[in-house]
Image (cartoon, rainbow, N blue to C red; front, side, top):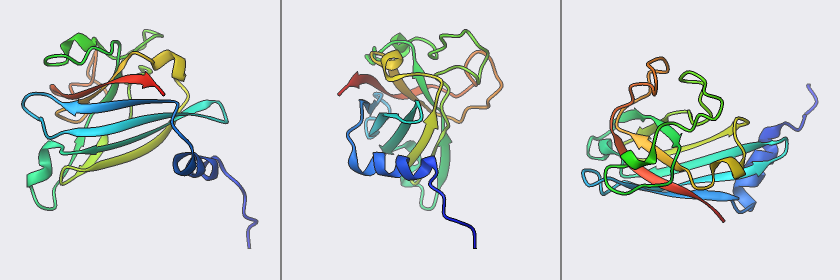
Length: 164
């Protein structure tokens, strides 16, 4: 029988269950999607990296029984979530890399009848880097190739990232 080894997952589960995030974005929908709301939390971890947890309610497929859809999730340059979220700028991309290698390119949300939960580990940014930026949810999935932003559709939800 193999010896049980502690992996980073063990510390990540503990982080999510028992610790307060270092930063958070309260995400709300645009005028066409006012039912969208959720939290995206950012935890500084050891090894050096960021654990991200997203929980979102009211995504557009909520009325379709047994439906699932992908929605692009990105960090954008500015924390301005007024209007149609265009003032949030482009993807956060401090290294000026092509899509999908921007620091702001995050894994897509998989929504099941309007609800999505996701958690992942990332080493491309720090808490300090993202304070004052925004989390944007797009109307479609990211194709992971189109430039400059993955052809992910319109911006349907936005939240400014704030330190806690």
